[in-house]
Amino acid sequence: MPLRPLAAAVAVLTLAASLLAAAASPAVASGPRRLELTYEIYYGGFLSGSLDVTVDATEGRYQMASRLRSRGAIDMLIRFTASSESQGVLSAGRVAPRRYRTDNTWMGEARRVRSTYRPDGGVEAVAVPSAAEDDREEIPPAAARGSVDPLSAALALARSAGAGAACTTEVRVFDGWRLYDLRLAYGGEERLTGDRYTGPARRCRVTFTRLGGRSQRPWLPRSVRPSTAELWFAPVAEGLPPVPVRLETEVAFATLVAHLVAARATGPTRSEAAAAIH
Image (cartoon, rainbow, N blue to C red; front, side, top):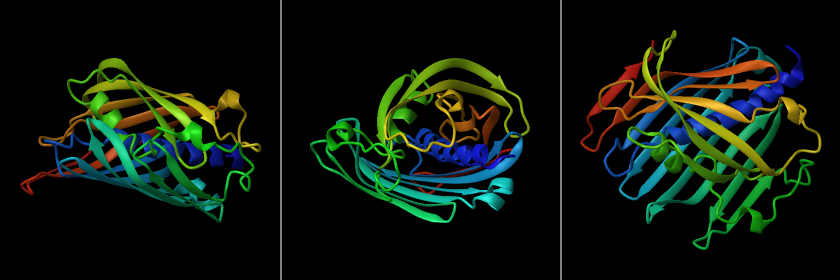
């Protein structure tokens, strides 16, 4: 497999990680206090990455973490790792991030973002390398106002995709380099059949709209970059909220698929529910 599609696939793994982590967030008021999910990610049928997501939620507050690493052929060529954390509060039913950080290694280069969020909606983000150093469009502070980080898109997406919800919402995301909108749309109730999960699931379509931060030296032309992805949600075990069990999108003429392989939740009384997905 050529290097450019591999690198593009890693970039989409990062976006998939954000989507999966966001969609996985439980209801804060009554759901599990801690939710741990593990995914395997395949590109073109080959194991290409793994993702661990942890969500800690208490009344009015949340903390999320994700860790993504490349595996297989991508790992041999690029050795990509990324870890992210987000903290925030719920204010009048709205997601209000307070701090966000991400650190990743891309082809041997260390990259990081540190963001803080003001009560007026302003975002102060420090990215290394900067947009100019990374040869990409710079996002002016006014454009990022009111946006959330990739992990804090969690509560808006989760509430819209959970059981009994409409699976329709839109959120603006700024990751320190790129600004984009994510729109969720209901795709119907289905029965999944596969090696990992078999059973009823809710299908939601995610549409990506890039608003800024485009690279001047992109890996792939815009015509083959993903603009949509499909997410399937299901309660995989008693005591667990509906979580994303599968994500699928097309990248550079191949399919990228993420499967949930393990889930564990701890409730307010420290009771636990766990599932290994077979």
